[in-house]
Length: 287
Image (cartoon, rainbow, N blue to C red; front, side, top):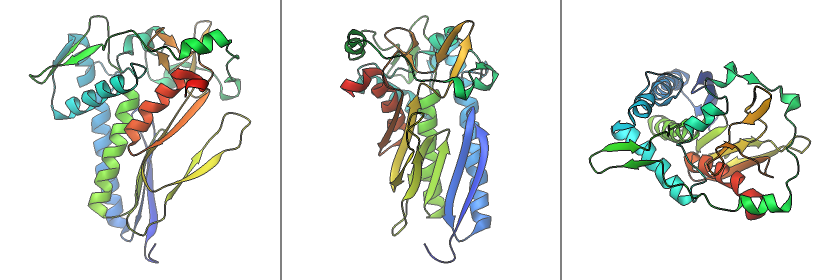
């Protein structure tokens, strides 16, 4: 980096998670101005795509069983449908009703969260269970995108765009920053990380945590994105039952899998997010 270039950053809360934006720049004032733009844009997206606000555009579609889509919603839902096909249905955004049934009916901080030191590794699966992990879902897509620019959601299904929306937004914000500033940048939305590095720039060092008791690792990322999913991060109690946020579409409940945590690096943060969920659901042997 040029001697005049410095690392600037901003942290804030958005999309029900912590966010961090970093850039290498020689102009602190311009960097701050771009942070304002990115933060406002992420809040706008969050308000549109959240399932926790009855008045959001997503909840309007859920309540009506579909409706008209603008370009933004069409882009996200097109990506979600492609992800369903690419993963044989293991990545499915139409699990909102199942998340509510599991007790995830409000923002995570409002739940009866299991303390971090009690989020132990799941029990060892029997071989027969591991075989079942590899089975594809038999459920058909839960929504259809029609040629007239509308979506139709199957009765009883509700869409939750949480993970894929964060990856999509991180990619979009990072591209915008890189274009506006012509600088290396990083956008982190709750562990969904998108990066861009300008010519001659150094890769971003990204910390990747292992399962409890394992050593954390650092990887250098020069483009694309990284995402992690685990069974020990978003864990809550629903009555006497402990649940986590990775729902298996084959069972409709929190996934029972021998994979504790998955980190994926991909050319797109959104795609990395998709494959963390899919790989967790296929199990260790198939992954």
